[in-house]
Length: 258
Image 1 (spheres, rainbow, N blue to C red):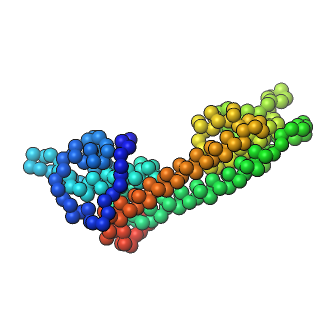
Image 2 (image 1 turned 90 degrees about the horizontal axis):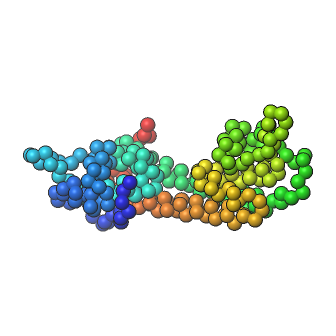
């Protein structure tokens, strides 16, 4: 993982024109990573190939530093795998750089829409009373799965992970979801739609059960919103970095990447 340092890109000049010779350690220090990471980024196509001296030592240019910083911003916004794919496209004209960037922004936009829906749903769910429990209000696995629009296997997985643990009835121990269990399942479903992973939800659900912890749900969604904002800002910075590095490629026709 890259060390947290500033990744801002100098603007107003073409960084490709600055070709001062830099050692691997120089690039590592300025990009906030290790010497081995610099070599790995070159190997993975994030950095263009370095020149070699007669004795075989690598000689980098300012462009390599800026590429490393651009990658770091991309990795913060879209993850390291996609960031490497975008950087490789940036070094290959006509490989769909702009399409890849558009797709990354579109995924964040979709997350925002899903988060807004989840927030509204969580607010409504948290306000629902679960008192006055009647036996007829309970649901089977198949009934609850149909009501939520998920597969029964998802409910069984949530049971195994301790997120929503229903009671058991009958000689075969069939699952039976009480109204309180149904409410828990609806909260888990909405938070999963918003992108929350099983591990954090496992720690959070004990505090969410019942009617007194609606604010906890909204706090979790607010944290997700802040994470999306952080990644969106990183993508914005990465786009600016790529535009400074590759002004010609930024306006070149883009084909769909495989």
